[in-house]
Image (tube, rainbow, N blue to C red; front, side, top):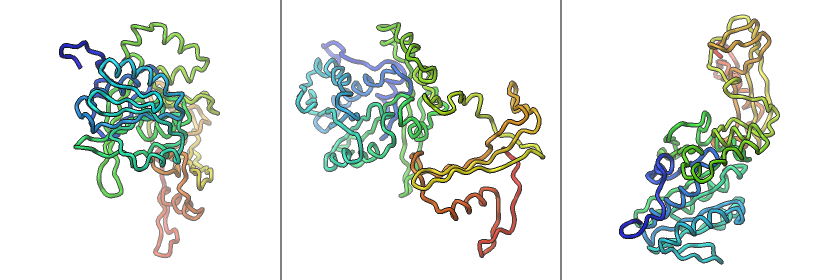
Length: 355
């Protein structure tokens, strides 16, 4: 993209460069607003197409095609000067070396199924946080197929604050929000290991935006929601706008484990669920002011949730596992250290005092 011609696009140091270099089959890129996500993926695809030619076939998906307008306009600024040809009716680029880049619509599983039979080397789901669950996105894994040795890649970009905040946070371990790229490994049912890259990006990483629009951060402070500002600026995936407990602060309300003193009252709570998750909580009541760590004293009467069992599917925190009441009861006793004979009768219960 250089030679005797001018450089049309180059990655900024930091997250964008990490994205360009990342070969892993699934990538979460982003986390805070203004981190250069759109430019990063469009630029990566221009470089990958230059290297792989006609075998490259990529699609960007959003919940509405209207939402893709900004990305399409930015693609014209990058792909046009390097020789790409854009078909406005099909929302598709034919790139200078014969590869293809398109923009599509994905709202639900039916939309994903409509793509079955298509072979794509690369998929990008922009604003993945707008999806209440990951099902439509997961279904796209079936359309990713390697061509002529090209590794496939699924890229998700997102900011905190949307309806999909919880499943994204759980799936990519976004709390606490990582300071640098990390690799997660999932064990698949066939015994293989699937590697996923998490590349955090913050507005401070986008030097171009900071230089061209120095008041961008000032405008974010005026969106009217303190939680949303914290989420967008800091990549805080624990901040939930409109939450019932809007005073929630993970730095204050989550503490390191400690040994529960003898004599503290302990009890259990339960919220039933089958198709939706159930939640079993184990609690203790602070008997006297207790220093949990330097600078933090738990006041007398405070309740501490020291163990929980949340019945959801892996990576789908809003989908239950459909256990019967008897199975949930058995799981509770097992977690409390109960021992059983061959007939299923409880014979012994060990005491737990660790928070």
